[in-house]
Image 1 (tube, rainbow, N blue to C red):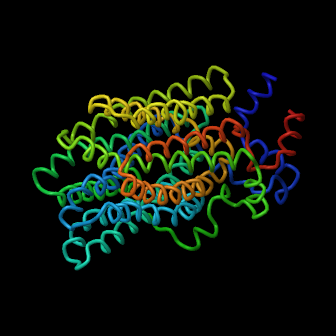
Image 2 (cartoon, rainbow, N blue to C red; image 1 turned 30 degrees about the horizontal axis):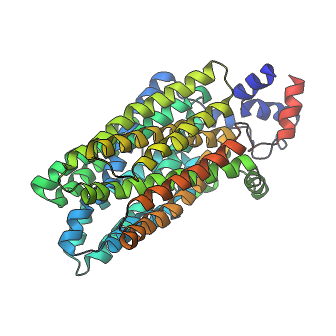
Image 3 (cartoon, one colour; image 1 turned 45 degrees about the horizontal axis):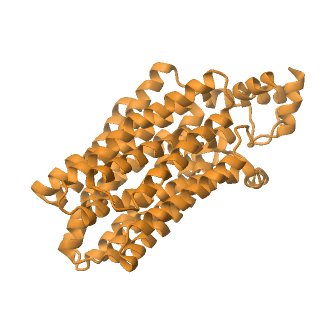
Length: 466
């Protein structure tokens, strides 16, 4: 049994491809081609470290731009006379756009390279963020212009995480994926932390418009530096020809996609990620309003900074712990489940504690614990998709994120409806806990870590041969 587990951890699709191609260049595992060794060259460790820092910074700026609206929502709603339901519509419209480009972004990244997709999208959503105040002031109906702007932001940012998943599955070895994904994922908390602290100060000193201007221009600058120094000025052109003749990693047939979606483990990661994403998006969108409503005299920088200050080291710790356990020989699926248990199970305990009457320091502590534990999903379900289908991780992650974004739309809007009709935040936190526990039970019951994107009979054949 130990030999089988070790073989499963180190198994490489290149081996199957070479074995099959000895017999014939035209036969082999479906979706597997001779060019895999060249296409699948991993980064060296120094190169991987540079890319990790760059992607961390890019994800940080992604969230600076994304969270600018929730940070400014209270001030904008006062200026433009929005109700909570209208604020929820503006905040939730982001996720409608976010739904549409997830699968497309992963599909294109699997074929032409995730770095090109990341570069083009960052230049676009950075520009959109900088133009948001202009759209708000020069439109006669700001509610419509802001809803449209958030929808377009969702479209442009929707390709980011599928591109990261595709890039990581193609360029990073299995034993280091947990650290890279958790480190890059911590950029979301670092970005929320920066925009929560600096954004709150800019909001008070210079008005809400300054938050959009600064975060947008910095994002465009990041895209330029990535193009200039990492891609060496190479034109990030994506043509129809490149999509049609892209990397063989993404060339799975319709039959193989159907076979993937029939696997309980694949369905489990989709459902679990749906629950994780929707609860996180809901907390991200409504926590600033929660603290303003319950503790109106509290300083904004406290509740906009401390939870994310806790989340950053927590995310890094989860990645190191995950990779360490795997390197020590623990079963990969068990490690993924353990990380997800902390992310959805233990964090729900602290979410429930927010339902009762509490003081401001305790509320900040409970929210900080919740957000810190939530980061463990970067070493759980977020990496598990690369275990199951590394050859099409970008597209499959796009499917997962589409489901998560769609549920995020519903939960963000429905949470606003609950607050307005019940006048209680306890109903929102109870809903978040219920969704979390549903996703956790699904993952614990069905999650696996073996590959499903290649013919399992071929794997058994070559295991015996070796």
